[in-house]
Structure formats: C-alpha cells, structure tokens
Amino acid sequence: MEKDNIFVQIASYRDPELIPTLDSLFENAAFPHNIKVCVHNQYSDDDNFGLQKYRKDPNVIIIDTPYNESKGACWARNLIQQKYNNEKYTLQLDSHHRFVKHWDVKLITMYENLREQGHKKPLLTTYATAYDPNNFSIKDSDVPWGMKFDRFTPEGIVFFLPWHMDKDTPEPIPARFYSAHFAFTTGEFCNEVQHDDQIYFHGEEISIAVRAFTHGYSLFHPNEVLVYHEYTRQNRTKHWDDHNSWHIENNKAHERVRKLLGVDGECSPCHRKKLFKEYGLGNVRTLEEYEEYSGIRFSDRAIRQSCLDNEIPTLGKKDELYHDKFTHIINLHGNQFQYDDYMFCAIIFEDENKKELFRKDVTNLNDLIKNKDNFILPVESNTKKPSNIVVWAHSASKGWAERLDIPI
Image (tube, rainbow, N blue to C red):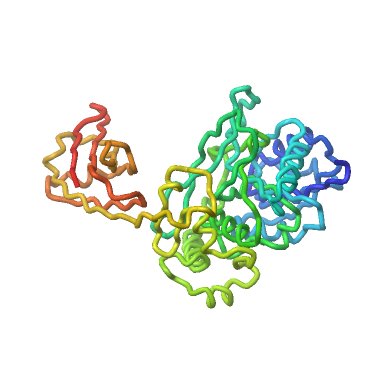
C-alpha cells in the first residue's frame, strides 16, 4: 500500500478541534507520508488556536479565509476539491475527529474488497461513532453507526438519524445516504461530484447522495469503527453565529435542492440539466432508480415502508407501494389540560397494534392552552395512516400528565 495516496479534505470553521484532529489523523495512519491533507481554514484573529504546526508540512495544503468572507460549508468544500491532484483515493471529513490505528489501511482494504466483489465505484460513508473531546478513548463496546431516514423537513430536505450496527456485522452494508463528515472513495470523486457552492448547509448530504448514486457510485456503511466524530458543537463558533444573513442563503439552498431532486414537482428534468450543469445528476443511473433504491419519492414526499423500517436498500422492490405524506388536524381544547408548566406535549401516531409509527414533540403547549379555548395541532408525517393518535402532555412538576387517545 506504499503507493496508495489519499487526498483528505477538511473544511474547518474556527474550530479548536482542528489541530487535535490533524494530530490524530497522521499519528494513527500506517503510511502518513501517503496522506495529502487540504484544510480550508476559515479563521478569526480573535481565536487562540492556529495552524503554525502544519504550515511547513509538505503533506498539508492550507487555504486561509477570514471567517467574515466565508460563504458556507459547500462553498468551503468546493474550494478544497480544486486542490485535488490525482491522488488515488479521497476522504472527506469535518475538523473534529479521532482515528483508530491504521485507519488508512483499513479503509483501503475495505474499499478494494468491495471492488473485487464487482462494485466499480464503492463509496464508504456514515455518521461516524461519537466521541467526547474531553475524555476520548477507544472502548471495546464501541460499535459502527449507520444512517436511516428521519423525515422531510417543511422545506423539503431529507434529514437522517444515526443507528447502531451490530458489532459482528461481517462486511460493509449498502447505504441509502451520504455523510458529509465521513466519505471515502476514489479520488476521481473530487472531479465527478463536486460540491455545489450555492448550497449553504442543509441539503448538502441528500443532494450528494443522489448525485453520487446517479454517477455510478455504490454507497456503503463501514462495518467497523474507523473514525470518530464530535457532534455537540460545544465550544465551537458556528458559521451561523457570525453571519446574520445565513438563513437567507439557507433558504436559497433549500430551493436549489428541491429543484435538483424534483421535490413537490418543482423542476422538470430538462430544466434541471440546464440549471445545474456540473452540479447536476449523473447519467449512469437515473433519479427514479435512486428513488426505487432508497424508497424515497421526492415528487410527493412519499416513503416506502422498507425505508421507514431501515431495511437494506435494493433496486429489487419495484412493486412496493409508497405511503403518501399524511397530515392530520388534531382538535383540542385548553380545558383538557390542568397545569401551567408543560415542558412539551408528545404527539404519537400508532398503528392498529399500538406500535408507534411517528412521534413529534410540541413545545409551546402552555401558549396554546392559556386562553382555555379550542385550538388545533396540524401534524404531518410520512408514515401510513395511523389507527390512533396519542396526545400526551409532560409537566415540569408532575411528569407525564394528561394522556388523550384519539381514534382515527
């Protein structure tokens, strides 16, 4: 593996974890001289951490951008991709990670084994197992994580949740989704699927998942822990903390993702091709094939049960039905609730066997009931139509309080 070089992409925004991340990356690589790292360092002079340690390192490229000139995550990642120099592999990360011993050899071995099985362009990606930067250690109980469907946001963006894989999973498993903080594949990905610099933040992962799939990449979750990720964002300044207009750019990104994926039928295929150009879909597979593979239909935000149940994705379920998005208006009255210190109210959809299909927590119950009048709660989910809806209030002083069952 002496010749197997890796182009590592790290977009960093005022992150005190950047240096420990680089230290862990190089210290735990079996062949650190084969690692070429490009860091997009979005910095402030007010921060008391810097990159002096790595500025003369021939294996580290640093793009410096003052934080107030930064335009968001995908813009930062796009500039990194321009530094790609024909390395055999690429690994995209965030700037808050820890690595297991010989992570590079393990990733390459996993990738090449998938190629030997007939997958021309494997892409290993997942929500990496969490770590605490103040108390990091690798434990025998650590398990690899995967990604499963969570919901469509009101703006039409697909969100995911992590799930814990069995520790004895024998090989990487097919994945529906792409993680922006951990993605390993052929270096050509930097040319073939470049980040759309007009996508601010939300929508990055689902758009890259579909674009990668349609460019012929096969998505997999690794079956062992190789990299750890810090999720809490504590003690880190975020881009939206510094930029008051971030929500405007994020809304533009939402619209762009809806057009790319045809969410709510917003964009025709022929207009899509002209609009997105190099940031569009590939021509190896179609958008419809991704929908069949994932169990997510973007045009009407419909979901197959196999996706909701987190079954292994496949192109072999043409006949499986989709559940249309379901909206139910729950009519309630303030007199049904007797306390004034509710922390939240759980809205739970159940099937005919009382199995939970969906849950949403409403945090403004105190405001809704203060006048003791009738009020409504519109709740939308992508599950099948429930047989029963539970409205269950939680009080700060009493704990779980009023429970209302509403048959459908």
